Image: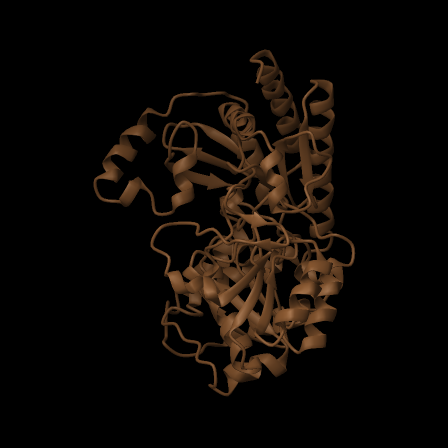
Length: 458
């Protein structure tokens, strides 16, 4: 019997009546938020949790593709906890894996056999994963990759792209803000700091460029290749509009980094295990030197991996590059990753996620046309983005200025009022336990929301 279907079918029956009920009351969440603000800065533990409608919400339970808040509202979930819940919330196989492991110990400050089992599994699935180390999140794994690249090439700078998110640490917290007046010329961008408090010298660690322009990359490297240790990129610009790579762009990065002897780093925190078991590098057939994985790796447990070709990872093996962490490879984290990957390894799982994602994308496009709206739906299927603009395609971060942000925000809020939970910036995720019924219900609620926006003249 497969892992993915029967628990979800039971969960669907459990929530069948609740999920179509529209409730606007969030009284208990509001009270908890006021209480929380007295002890948690801003009342939250991550900045992005502030921006629910009508305010940060508190949740009490989740199962399969549904999540319930403390006021009893049940949402059909397309946020999937910002992506990690690729096999759904509280998957029985994952929880059983964790429970079995936890009964034997939590953290040994030493090695255990399940680490080898997980590493061997990743080695089989991920094209570039000849060797690896486990970390706790994408931010630390990214910094490990950059450290390896600098050590091997003896160069200090890296190239990164506007709108690409590689964690919240200083040297990558630039170029994430839409500010047309301060972004500089396209061929020579200015990096805008994402937040106050960033070390001013950190902008000297990189050159930032618009994405999807291999000619500009090559021109830049022709001038600066003697300074550049690596190019780091999301294979799909998921965090900013879910923009797909132009044909031959990723292969172009591969060829130019090989030419100059620098590292090509894929940040697969989102694309890893979602586009394919081997990530976007498997899907697109481009093998980077180093890769970073997290999110969908372990069903919400804090684990990431820095993986790569032996010639690069050998610097870690030889202790020339120090990588450490007290909580790395804690027993429950490894067990969660193994359990998640075992569910994803089921035959047909990724085909199903792609098929349902495409069904939802096409349905949203259809109801947009039917309601006379300019909703642009863009992405691969397992993840995609919606927003309102008159362009037929978004190719890079600077194109995002064409989105009508107030209208896009109202669309997401309208969906939430109808029990459909989507990430505030318009990013949707599909899980292995969504069904056609869930997809069609979301399309119906989207049509209702679009009609409401139309009647409001937005």
